[in-house]
Figure 1 (cartoon, rainbow, N blue to C red):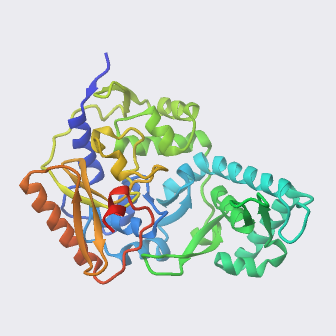
Figure 2: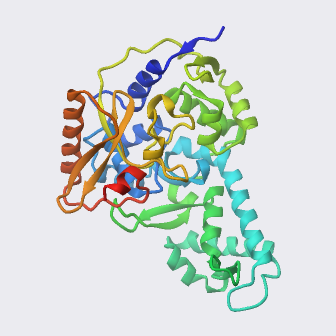
Figure 3: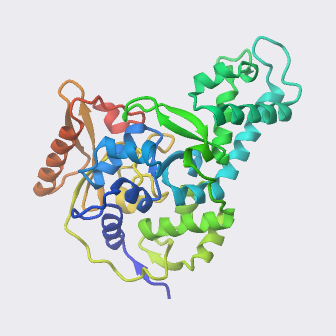
Length: 399
């Protein structure tokens, strides 16, 4: 008979593992947090910093900038679900080994399709040798970036012979010119050949240069096989997010059931029964119940690792999916109490204040704690304009 893990216990684990209790922090807090969380989502630059602040309010933007660009202990990488993450070096190797080849192959297939069927802008003919173009352009990009770091725009200017666009869906209102060199950069990034290097903007609106992975790390990226990479990522995810379902892991990784099942076997994952009726998984040394901590108020940014950590979210999301997630599955800014989403929040640009937007009634202590958290976040942001890209349906109504 499978051990049972109820929703209360899942929420207790979520709070304990994903939001360590206040107390002494290591000097490398952003790096330690990124390792624990299996990475920060980095599609929106501000998410990285606000996700770290939510777990350690002493973290300042400069701490993350140092970890990313000075120490390079954290690295931006196109990884799970073809999403940009900030990963520790060990998890970087695992992600490239497990997911990189899959994402890179998909990017290459998409490029080949466009190059074969779409005419080059300004002409009536497609590229005569698409595979040859990809090979030659890749070689030119790698040689150029081995000499200096460049932004995408600078790289396009440096390689005009490869800076071509193709006319996608010519004659259609939804068609247009599609530049191919930026697509090639995503392909090379997923493969682990190049990486986003120094930031060219503020922490809130970072734009990055490109460089080779080896020159950025100062050494070769360790090789991880797809099986070993999957096992490492699944082990890390279960340690922090478990219990979770096979469906959770397939979705979070952007991988296959076959790969996830093999990884679950490799880490000796144990089946547990969840309140939803689903089969969940835990690591074999993590079957004992954890002691629930006191309720905590949390304000999380859009695309936070916790909000986006699961496919099946009812145990912490309840009935609020339509208010928090947009039509493509992106989670917006959220307010939490005692391990559950109870609303969202918004930054008022005219006053720089942060306002909590509740979706349900909460106890008076919860309301006070959330309002205090909002004041703390507003103070942390100061006069910095908060740049976001994935507002929830709830916050869109309050803009």
